[in-house]
Structures are given as C-alpha cells and as structure tokens.
Amino acid sequence: AQKITQTQPGMFVQEKEAVTLDCTYDTSDPSYGLFWYKQPSSGEMIFLIYQGSYDQQNATEGRYSLNFQKARKSANLVISASQLGDSAMYFCAMRGNNAGNMLTFGGGTRLMVKP
Amino acid sequence: EAGVAQSPRYKIIEKRQSVAFWCNPISGHATLYWYQQILGQGPKLLIQFQNNGVVDDSQLPKDRFSAERLKGVDSTLKIQPAKLEDSAVYLCASSLVLAASYNEQFFGPGTRLTVL
Image (cartoon, rainbow over all chains, first blue to last red; front, side, top):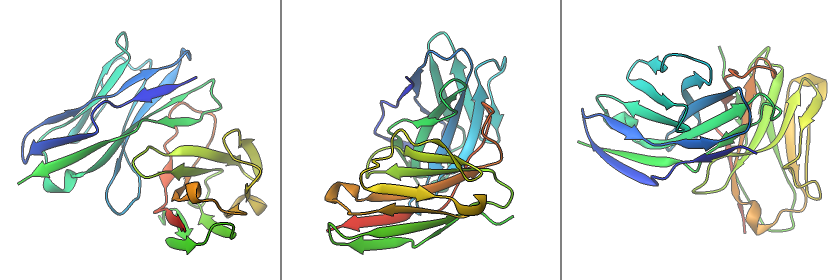
C-alpha cells in the first residue's frame, strides 16, 4: 500500500521569500514517481513538478524544485521567490508501477503568501 | 489544446436523489480518472478507465456509484441514491497512457456536489 503524509496543514510565507512544503511517503514499490500539484480556490489541480525514484538529480521547474531524499522517503517542494498568486492548496502525490498506476494523494498544505 | 471539461460545475440535491456528472477528456487521452475530494482532504481515486474498459474501480462504492465511458471518450459518473457523505468535489482527469511511472494527469475544474 502507498501512503503520502503532509504534516503542515497551513503555512504562511512573506512575499519574495522561499518556502518548503514537506512530504513524506511510504511504498513497497521499487520504482515510483512523485508529483506535486497546486489547487487554487478555483478548484482545478495544476501539475507543478515530477520526480522519478531513479532520477539522480532533483527536479526543477522554474521557481519550483523538489528536494528528494530517497533514504528518508521525503520529497519536499521548495518554492523560491514566493508570489501572491502562489497562495493555494498544495498536494503531494505518488504513483507506483505495481499499484495499477494509481495516484495516491496526501492531505495537502494550504500556503498563504503575505504581501 | 482544450483542457478537461466537466459539467455541471455545481449541483445541489436532496439525499436519496440521483445525480450524474459528465467529463470530456483531452482529445487523444486514452486514460480517464474520476476522483472524489472531500473538503479538507486530498483527492481519492474512484475509478480509472483505459479507453472504454475499467482498469481499477476498487474504491468505487458500487452499491450507489456507477461510471461508464462509452466509445472511449466522454464519461459519466452517477450516484443513485445520494447520501449526505457524498458531498464533495468530483474531479475528472485524463492522461495519454496508463503504463508509465511518469504519466502526467490533467484535471478538469471539478463538480462541487452538495447533498442536503
């Protein structure tokens, strides 16, 4: 069984500062993928970044980077230079190759950017 | 490229009534997913289709929920009869292929269901 844990229900960050959203996972699959999605108040899930379990380097996409520590089973999202538009819910998710490719989501973290 | 379309966006019904949601995936996407997102939680997969066949419906409450994907394109999710605990946002997503660890899913705007 797969499990994703996001321990921060809510976080504040000052505009233009960096913020780290925590995500830990548990799986028995040797190969898996980790995803981060953003969900603004409009409700749509927006894909941000992906990290494969065998990727040697941490994934980066613009202001988003993923701090992947495989031994600790953590995949934290780092947002640099926060903007007001970054205020939203953020979900960490995982897919394992042996789990019917089912995407398992964590409970989410609400990020609020202060001007 | 048009995104995933869903309708209606909002629905309010009384318990024990029936309701249906519609989803049109991105053109060419073979895989379609329905998720239930209860307020304050992450989405939970209900069912996934590969073309018009069901791949996984292990978390679908089959006594009241049903879904179909005729002709491998549009899909409908039905609840009959609805219960109070079915109040949630129902998200539809699609992806190109099923069998790949990296397989980005594109989500629709969701349908917010309120059961009174």
